[in-house]
Length: 223
Image 1 (cartoon, rainbow, N blue to C red):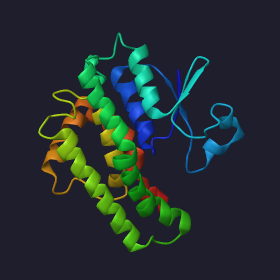
Image 2: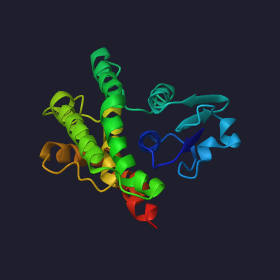
Image 3: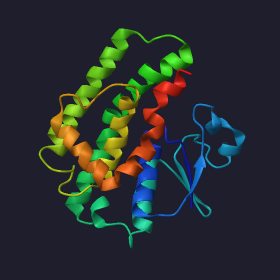
Image 4: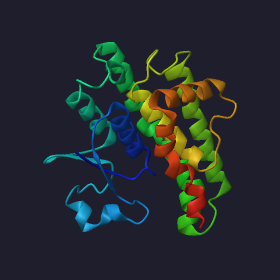
């Protein structure tokens, strides 16, 4: 199996982390987003969508990170612990609820922060309007509030006592604005505790490996 990834991307990190932590063998195929490799004719032969992640399993090609994660769970059900994507209908529905919600909320707002604070100065050579950044930060705060109050509440993880795909997808998106230098965990002890549980469940070394690019992005984008 081949995974076409760039760990600068949160969806790519979720697929990378899941395959690694569960023990699904794959070949890492780097697609450099900043150099525009996703727009090359070579990559177009793999996916006309020109986005990553992309999974190639034999002759079968799949795009969209959530679809890839669900495929991996089902194909490798013999080695994937049930807590990642529970068979219980209600527990699985809770995972799906979060995965459906996050696209236009935590993902959208976290990515916008990274775009404005990190990529915009790199591409445009100037700082974005402060009003736009402030508005984006407020939107992100609202999403973080809903993550805490609606989805996490007082549970160890989003759907209960064990990590699931919901937590995995949530943490990689939260780390995107963190990579821009914004401490989204400040004043949020519940989220800090949850983050540490997620890191421990994934393995801190693996977590740091997956996020090394994003955590150093401000440094190398300014070089």
